[in-house]
Amino acid sequence: MIEARHLRVLRAVARTGSFSAAARELGCTQPAISQQMKALEKSVDTPLVVRSGRGMQLSEAGRVLLKHATGILAGLSAAEEEVAAIAGLRAGRVRLVSFPTASSTLVPPAVARLRDSHPGVRVSLVEAEPPESLAMLRGGECEIALAFRYPQSDGAVALPAPAHGTPREARAEANLEAQQLTAGTDWSDLVVTPLLDDPLVGVLPAAHPLAGRGGAVGLAELAEEQWIAGCPQCRGHLVELCTGAGFEPRIDFATDDYPAVVGLVAAGLGVAVLPRLALRSVRPDGVSTVPVRTASGAPAVRQVVALTLPDLADVPAVALMLERLSGAAADR
Image (cartoon, rainbow, N blue to C red; front, top):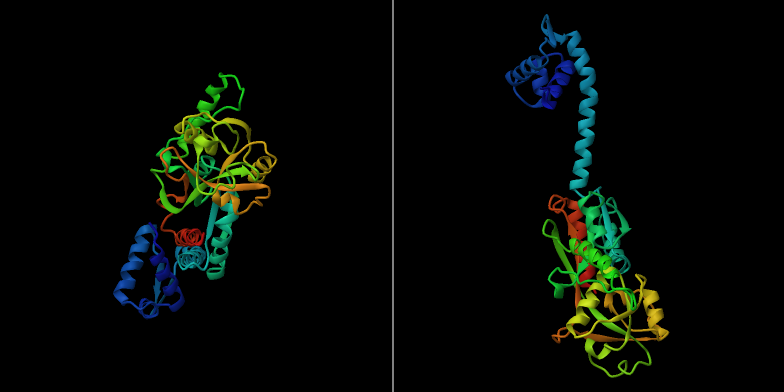
């Protein structure tokens, strides 16, 4: 096998015309140069140098190998420089996948801080909700996925309720959806960086009797309300919380769009439970927000995290991006 160190010796011998001069150029001994040349000739099974008088010159095979060695060593040098740039954070790439709430609140300040300190590191962003974002991470389509789950569920996802009045046969499809969502909460093969616990708040029409009461609202107090639900995972968790409070919510509207949820609530068409982080990027006109208590009396929260693969966690650009995301979360 031809080694790069042998090619460097061949190039030095060709340039200087002797083993001793090559040794001085490379900072080693003449016997070491001789041994490496013998090893290289053994690898290619043909002489590479021809002695002539007091000097030496390359054989025909030596000249052919030197021609290729020049390009090989130049390529290796370029590769070493690029790797060193990445290791030193003068270059690098981080591909983020994030759910929309984090995209509008946590990602912008984190990326801005990274670019300020390391402008050579490129960051890109694609939006996807878990479990799709987890599949993208495991499939090599990104280095970091921002995701969330609900700690009250201990990783389980409740059965999403069909809209009010839907035939019971529709629950079979909802059950399959719940199984797919549960797969998205299994993070045992990933490196998890907790970012924050995002409180869930009740969103009520401004004129709702509970809006101006002050203090937290128990979910059981909203049992007779019409509900507006969010994404499938959020809807499943809403059903779980309400079931724990002793009722099944009547879900008349379901939308992933938070401004639409706020608009529906403001129009008096129902109530909702939203992450507080989501309301930071929505104008809450015509609604009132109140803390929400679960059946146990504990506040309702979701856990927001950054996920990556174990082999990626020590890549300098990835580690720095995780640090910047943690900093952005700490400022919330």
